[in-house]
Length: 333
Image (cartoon, rainbow, N blue to C red; front, side, top):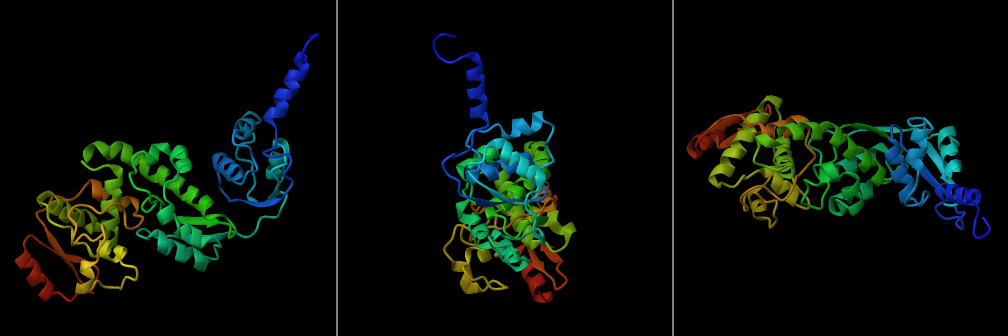
């Protein structure tokens, strides 16, 4: 070419653009934690949010085309926004820093985000306070884009109910965002296949099902009673009776006690199901799959009341009078 760039120069510029660093003028070094078991997509999110990769990158296509997917090593890496893409990939493949010891934390079914944060703190997870903040930070625009199949069902701005309770291995220095990403993906893996089959069999949307499931999770101590407890709430909703569920009142209280006292039942909150009819605005904890199934498939009963016994089981009643007799005759927990 007499004018302009040659074809070879254009090709060179194109490849330089594809492999460009996020910021060639910023040579500062950041410690980036790559958790064990992280997908290529999760690694890309971590690198992009830390401004190690540019917003539009061929990181994943490059790994896929070169057959390197699944070969990135977990660990803590010293990476810079000035690093070009091949350098970043080489470091992640080589494990350039010895991975720190991972911690294992079990987050049981029925645990709220706040209590999950407490458990993470006890396990040595450094970003536990920011994790607790996910209750109010909720569903950011980036999360909605990354998990559109899930978050199209969510009308609220809280992640409560959407962080799947399970056992996780994570680095102590990992960010709350990384752990939340892993837990949301676990939720998608465990719950979305069930929901996509079952959604036609309930009048509730997924957010409402999770809300009901979270109350069932808190009330049921015996697994076999979950569908029966679900039926009580269905029956109450059908006749416009308040759910009157103690766990929702506890969720509304700043400092909840082990049992709910009469004076606490007047707390002003949309989660107070003694005062507010219908379901509360969102889940009060993160339920497991069995409680979610019970929320979709309640038992067929006429029960409207239940009272707990010392062993964690319940006596179910069809009328207020029978319920009062059950309360008087049965020592509660």
